[in-house]
Amino acid sequence: MSFTRPETFTTRPTLQGTFGMSATTHWLATGTAQAVLERGGNAFDAATAAAFVLHVVEPHLNGPGGDMTGVFSTAEEQGKPVVLMGQGPAPAGATVQHFRAEGLELVPGSGALAAAVPGAVDAWLLLLRDHGTWELAEVLDFAIRYARDGHPVLARVCSTISAVAELFREYWPTSAALWMPEGRIPVEGELVRNPALARTLQKLVQAGAGLGEAFAAEPAHSREERIDAARREWGEGFVARAVAESVRTPHRHSSGTNHRGVMTMADMAGFRASYEEAASLEFRGYTIAKTGPWGQGPALLQTLAILAGFDDDHLDPSTELGAHTILEAQKLALADREAYYGDADVPLDYLLSEEYAASRRELITENASLEFRPGSVPGREPYMPTLRTEYVPAALSDGDGGVGEPTIGEPTLGEPGVASNGETRGDTCHIDVVDRWGNMVSATPSGGWLQSSPAIPELGFCLGTRLQMTWLEPGTPSTLTPGKRPRTTLTPTLVLRDGAAVSALGSPGGDQQDQWQLLYLLRTIVGGYTPQQAIDAPAFHTTSMPGSFWPRTWEPGGAVVEDRLGDDVIAGLERRGHRITRAGDWTLGRLSAVVRDPSTGVLQAAANPRGAQGYAAGR
Image 1 (spheres, rainbow, N blue to C red):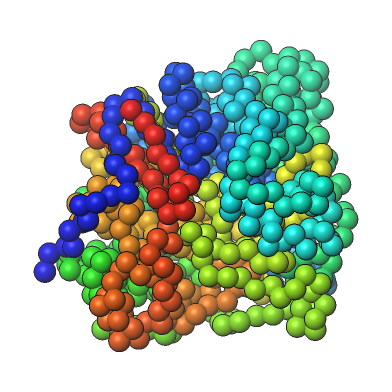
Image 2: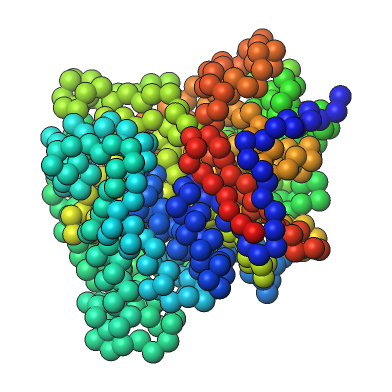
């Protein structure tokens, strides 16, 4: 049986050119990135400018108070993948003892107590300083203008505000003031503004002229010094002070109870973004590069290692056999994610070894497993999380939540729903850029969603809730620990071949990010699909593992599929024991990708059509 041939129809073309390509989850960010390339900037200038625009135009999916991870290669070292680490750690006051004393069993999914130190802004400024060419003022000008003068708001932003409107009105008045001016929820296409965020960004620019609070009032003499001045202003100046003051006010969390945050100025000042070596795996002649196991990225590598031992018939996502094999391999890798991954000593070499992959491969049978099955690592005891199929905190079960039932709906347009208490399971953005010199970057900004925690009025954004990915049980690989990073879901991908980067890709989607990227990789590397054909093709994912987001529940044997996978394939999966949820025809995945052929210099780009929001551009 041959690999399923791609559909001849695609929703849009795979773009081709030689100058530069950009692809993001919002057309305004894509347009921004491409505008930077057209004006002589490189891929790192373009990605940074687009990232700050995403803070403005996709505030329900990311914000300056959130985090990001990236993986990139430079034109000078095209064969060296580098991870950009923008995941902040737990604050000094974020201890298990403190959370337990607050009456919590899980880290909440909304509220400032769940905030890790914001890492996104410092990471982008670090990348710009070291690998970009533009001045900070030029890069931030796009975002400042959209925040100050307004942009047409997305329908999804409006629906998110609507979902949490009661929470804002009753418990988070600063958020109501920012996102519901005059008490009204904005409507799709309305020009919305965020003047406080515009002022925040402008102050960062002014810091380079010696006008900041965090250093002596001396103008910086070089571009790099000006960017570093902005970084200090962020971590030690007015931003840090406003953050520390804002969290002191007790406010409602997703637990249905009120708590203060624990972030301090010292926590903000103590964080610096950094570069790290990528984790990687060879698959069918390609090198797949990901973050380390403080993120979920290596789970994709483990899945590929398991699948590498099968023939092509088992790797086709469009068939019953292929979809079943892929789902089972993903469940095994994600079980190891829970059992072993964290900001700690993780035996990644063994988890990615051929020996270990072969042992895991043997567990895949003709029928779906309904078990949680982490593997055995010599000298290690796998962590076995509490496997909850449902969870309601005591305060909410007693009817004291105050904001209605905290239920989350089915995925809409590839994005998880938002509950009335601000609970959100994995909303994110993505950026891919490649330039004519061969610089390539893939980045996934997230966190600091408008529904994460109360808005900080003088800054125009709120803090994220990444600590919800830690456990309050001692002895786990991802136990909440001051100074340790939560195990993030943010997982961009860089693909290399013959010593050069050839593709950058990624997707929003929380626990689904790498699952959807896996389908793209199999279809392009094994099936020979073009980037747009692979993005358009039907998607699916497993839910048969503890979720990374509050309330950390799982669905044994659960699988969510797009109906376009076909009735025969879906029925076959059900016969094998998969517990299928049909999600509609065009609902899963928000992938984007850029591609470069090092031998010719030809560039390509593609973006997700689902939701009519993501776009690619280039020439």
